[in-house]
Length: 518
Image (cartoon, rainbow, N blue to C red; front, side, top):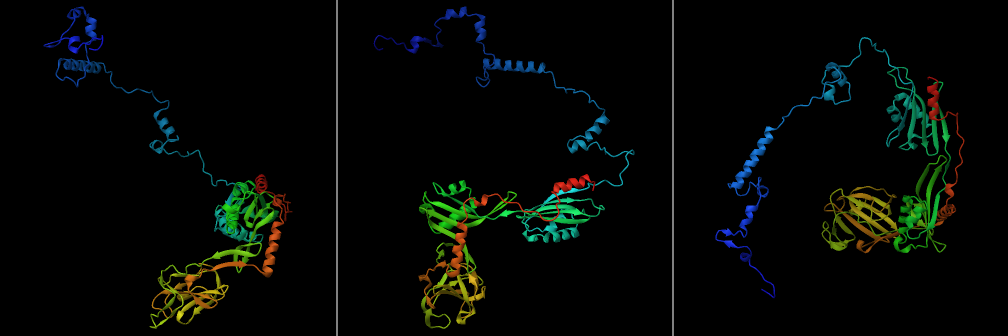
């Protein structure tokens, strides 16, 4: 007890006797009505509790009574009649055989739909007077085989191919070319159809149309005017050179080639500024019919402050195509390619010769390898020796300019000839054991002014340079390309005059022949 509050214990609030809870108001039970007693009666107790008690047995009796009532009132299961079909059984089976239904339903009647005696068979079914089709020339396919697959006889296909080759070499017809054909009526069912008309875009600048007149195919050459002015695109670099060039209309392939070319001279990420201007010229052809062909990159330039920072075009020197600056300097190629994939077995310097038995200078390095393994040129050069060469056996020597050279000995087979130009990494022979050798390996030497030096101390750096007439021609080509104004390749193309008789389009030929009943 705290303060003025009074607290009662549980026994004080609800008195308990010796037998349990003591009802404090026993006289109230006499006033309970039958409705209250019925409401407190639990007819569906939990049968999992107090198993065997009076309440449990009362619940079991209720469940049994409910189940018996449900069973006694069950109406049973009977099929629902849907009614008889509108057709008789035979008629329904015959109609079902002709329906668009699964085979199991259409073929289980055993009925065969056939013509009756009232139907007389035709001695010959009529054929279409002409067939129009389009064939596409595939890669590695031939023009004659394409015609034969389209239904043309082999003799007619060969003659037609010969006639077309008089206008354009068949090898010049690009894969993917569409050929429109009209095949006429054949004399007999066992014979192929003749070609009544043919139309094709033989080349970018030439269309061919053919039509049969008086039993002969007449060919008409339709030259297509083509403007070959290079496409020049210039613009400010801004935030992104690629996005700026794409917005100016440069093809994605040309921009990627441009970035690769200038990337060999400067760093695109750090050396190209937002205020610089790119100058891109690509090979471009545009036909009068609207088709265009975009070729390779011809010129790559970069302008800074109104002056040319880079000006590069592609040029061929000694049979090799590479990019040169306006000064005539070509690409820089540094370092040597490893001449063999095998491991190094002997170094440069004095050693005891394994065959001769005494010490002498080993003027190169040896690389082990399996018999027949490839040997690569260390860098670009010209073959001066390719054959037997003393103790080196089969030997190849290359000169690389500037007094530098390399040698490759003990080859099993030589893959180059004297005077041949080779590139870095090109296979020039195969590992063997010719000459003074105890097993298959490569003996590799490097020469400076004719004297053998340690290959580990040499790293070639080559840079082609144009001189004399080649330099003059090179600069003339730059002036020719840079004289093209930006957007000059987009001017309208004037049409050319067609040659030969006017045959009309392939649709005109088809309608004319169909209307004439031919």
